[in-house]
Image (spheres, rainbow, N blue to C red):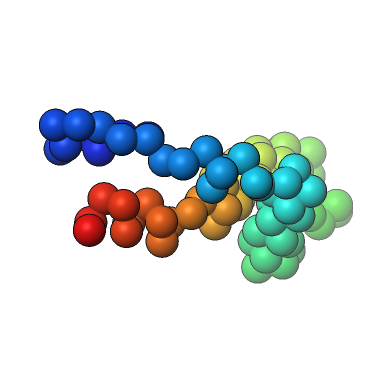
Length: 87
C-alpha cells in the first residue's frame, strides 16, 4: 500500500498481513454470514414458489459477498494504517 499524497510512497510492513491465518478468515466470514442470515431468516425458508426461492438464492449470494468484504475489513490492521498515514 502506498500513500498517494506522499512524495515517497511507503509500503505496509508485510508482517501485518502475512500473519493472518486462513482459519481466522474463514471463521470471520462464517460469523458475518451468520449475523446477516439470522437477521433475514426468510431467505432460507423452503416453502416458497420456485421463483421466490431463486430470488432469495440471489439475495443470499449478494449477502455472502458483502460478508466476505466485511471479514476482510475486520482483519486489516486499520490502527497501523491510520497511524502510518495520519501521523
